[in-house]
Length: 161
Image (cartoon, rainbow, N blue to C red; front, side, top):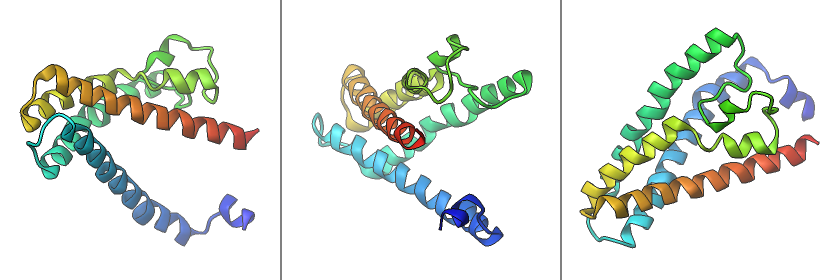
């Protein structure tokens, strides 16, 4: 079993790449929009799930496309992808990429923070609430997502030794 995980067959790699990864990403997007919907319902009865889902995907282009281009340029200039980040961890180059400090600092990614600001703008329109309340919802979700990512990072660190 362990040998199969370390040396997957070609079929397993194809299934992982073209079936499992897209399914997991789609479920993550659907769940994220649902959590934002629940948080938004605490302040307003306006807005539909489809609008939130669409706004989350469109705001995500900031991180995925613009952030991805900047990270790609950084990878080409540094000739390594390990530790390449657009987060606060960028200012601490001596940090090990698998350390707790790096995991925490990597949650403060500039493009993600920008993305959640834009999402807040969209949520204010969707829920018909003030921009301040929408930012509270948007960045509140970012905090929850960051705590989950830190928890997953800690869990993976404990498995690695």
